[in-house]
Length: 334
Image 1 (tube, one colour):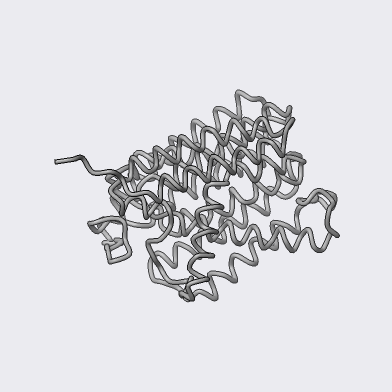
Image 2 (tube, one colour; image 1 turned 120 degrees about the vertical axis):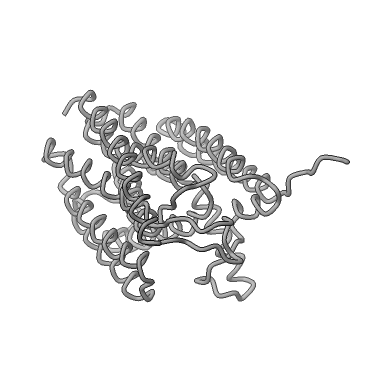
């Protein structure tokens, strides 16, 4: 596979995602599959949910094309595609009619276990610091947490799509600068393209939402890419690129745990939600996060030479972002 072909796959993926989203929007509106606002919502009107089926479908087609065109790219890739399909089916069923937590989590465990089992035995996520069994166990727990936090963070217009574009683009640039094969860059680039095709429909004011059928498979796919990057030696970059999402979701969970709250219940306490409650628009919040993501991409690329320094700089940048998001917007003086 050439770099030109990888770019062509990305362009086609974006076009398929955008066109399929338009078709899905009309279908969901006719079937009245809507997300109705409640006291924990960040939107004010009923909006079709489940639009992520177009994103997930476009991503599956793109990754299947890479697997067919470059069969030696990764033996784990077909298993990752299978995991995306499994979670897409279960999550679509959940969007149509809510499923209990147990079957949803069981599907995630199966998809993660299958994805990790297909990794090469020598591909150690934690760089050989742990025994093989501990490496795989901690990687599985981290992947499961990432799948769920990605779903938790899909709460305002454009955020999940923007984060997918940032992580996917960052991983693609990392592969290119590290001299990896075009197929290695094609996978994250296709993920970014699938999200990019969806973003015009999800930008404030959103006409359609990803739903679980979009956010759960996307979290799984990005988690697989990040673990693969870490196993290839890019562990610092794999931490830096999703650091805002990791920090916001994890700190919010810990804060709620310390207060003795039921952490599995819906809420509006993430930093990005506090920012919208404090007076910032969805566009303004996503713009702040996108700016921070651009910096994180630059730091991730520099982490190949200075991993600890870039990781420390990323932690400072994300910490400052969280402080800004938590601070209410100053109202104009009368």
